[in-house]
Amino acid sequence: MCVLKRELFKNIRFPINYLYEDMIIRLLIYPLCNKINTISSILYFYRVNNASLSISISNKTNFKSLSQFFLLKDIINMRKKLEFKDDELFKRFILSELTTNMFLRIRHLDKETIYDVFLASCELIENIDFNIKKSNIKEKIKVYCLKNKKFTIWKLISIYELILIKVR
Image (tube, rainbow, N blue to C red):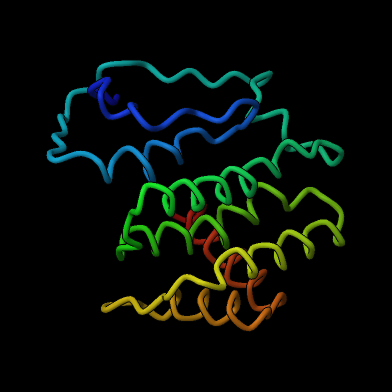
């Protein structure tokens, strides 16, 4: 659960017709916070709805899963307008979104669309310096794939991480 001050949204609006709006909170609102507190209490019950939007986007003809890419593109542009710095947390988040999370959301689409989204992702981060002080091998591979347009490796590292998530 997240409780945020209204003033944090003074210059930020949620774009209309996008899924994955939690990215806006992580990439635009959290950087504005001076202080973030967490509590360990469970305050709500999460119910899985098999007819929900997040379940329904997984069919092979549904292109709503592409909204993640377009929202991410808009968020990066908003961050530039707001003069946010590309800190290490942002860079790690972008790497995750443009590899494992992106592949998870678009894997049901046709091969050409997946490849086009990959190429668009590579272009999206061309001007981001991914010099992360303590990057691990997976982050280095992700940066290499995106900076050098290595589709097959991008796909493999994404699948590998998805397997690790399921094994845990």
